[in-house]
Image 1 (cartoon, one colour):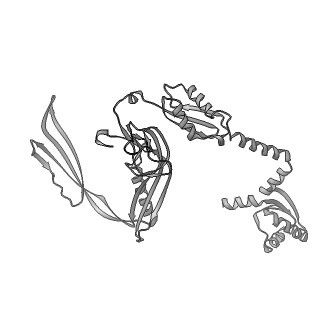
Image 2 (tube, helix red, strand yellow):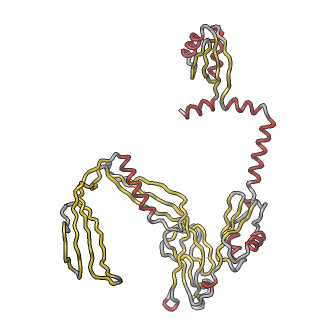
Image 3 (cartoon, helix red, strand yellow):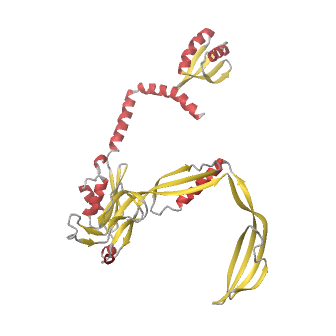
Length: 403
């Protein structure tokens, strides 16, 4: 077994050869005294085998007793590997310093790249990021990606959103440029609302008044960034409100749930092989000609139909040609094993959840949960997809009619 091979390697073993006329006697004595010998092979007057380190020590007195000669052919395993390394202190020191240097160098940022720019010069973004502390050679632990993202959006007017992502020794700055056509539209007032339930992870407000903060759970339709800016410190009578178009980016952790069920006894329909065909012509709201079977003759059936409209040159004639085929189905019962029933429920739950996932979803976790039905014949499964996505949805409002 592979697991046993791993255990033998970790504990170490010795490949030995035994020569002597009483080598069979030696092997029997070793087995009777609990010495575990593996892969015993005999070739002419020599026996080859594998024995662990402790067993080898106990085997030597027996060899003297039976006047056999034991010779070590090979030492295999982790203990011998460590011993050989201990004899090469220079190599061990070099390996230690190599991994130490690798760890130190991987703790710094060595490359900074910019993506998402079209009209903005990437060098300008790199220059501002350098002023904010993000540059090659900086220690990763000293960086605050969220703060740098916010400051970049503030320092560069043509950026509507910026995000900093640390990928090993590389930092990626993703930017979203402002769309001038949308910025110049006048009279547009809107809120940013939640497109679905979720847990807020990041929130960047470009315009509007922030209503939620990271760590809060929100419901679908809840206002995240309000398009009404007011000074809460002013008294209600003197408070002035400004209506704007709310803009921002809201990342949240959301969950999609799908459910599936199955029983050990399933009903399905299979074709019996019998079928009937028919044809009719329908025009001006009634059947004007028919042949064959046009009404279903079976209790359980599947119908295939082909319809064609009649045209003459470029003129459409209100006449329809319809071909019908009725296939008889027989209901049968299918018995499933518990494993098959559970797998069918899992597939149904997974398909149900996948049909709900949005195009913007970035799944980070998927798992099944078997539900307790109280019936050994029935299996129910819940499949959950955990995703991180932008749940911000713009919702316009008319200030004259209230927010």
